[in-house]
Length: 302
Image (cartoon, rainbow, N blue to C red; front, side, top):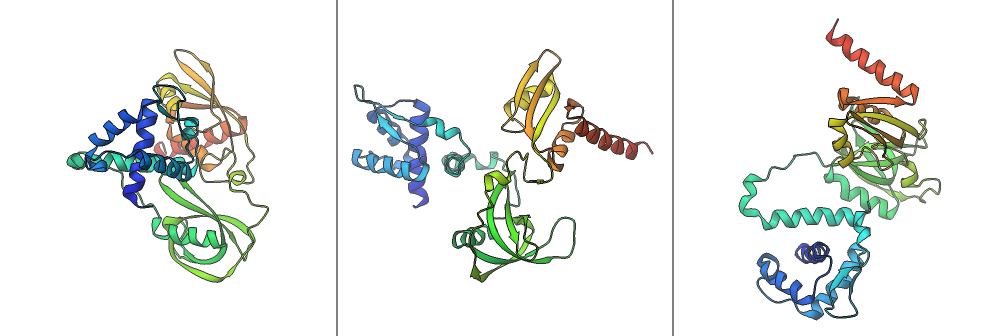
């Protein structure tokens, strides 16, 4: 589907969602006002109904019409827009794209973060995943200067903090490893294909993970955090994990619980929040964080 066509579908979704319910006449009026997409021309009703089916097929969203006057349109399964599916990620991405396209006149005042996205090899990896094809990769990890060759089954990809990662089963080790696409230097397709392993499920693999470190040796457990009142608002708006729950709140602090694997990346996140977060439980994690803080203190106080 052409990008301009997709942008039109995104516009319809957003317009109906913002209005909650809207008549075709009002939708058509707003459509004509958006000259960048409509060119000032009316939206034909048969075109709108065709786009409704395209929206269902592309984004999984159902647009229905009231059965009585004033016959307004609405998104019947709007709650689906809040779930972390690939369709919703695509919708969010295209929504931002639409906003930027519509405001090109102020582009010098819109500052974007430059990140190494790894998309250079994303298409090749997705193609290999689709065909269940082995790939050879030349990979340089962060801890080693010299690149290394791997022959792997590409099992899944995950986007985390604007970076793409791949879980691949290394043939020589029969072990699943995580690869950052930014660190891949070369990819070559193998002539051999594989049966997708029945013992691997991407969601189960990352279940309980804070980020991208699966840490199969670290079990999911309840973590209790004491957060200062000044930082608690931030934690509420941007939860550390989907399992986060606030169980205590007063003028000085809040207590949150999470069910996560407290791996290295989670510990780094706790330390990033500095004195505003204190680990209460489990005790081993509290001691681990305390040990790291002590080492940091010793560096500044030799």
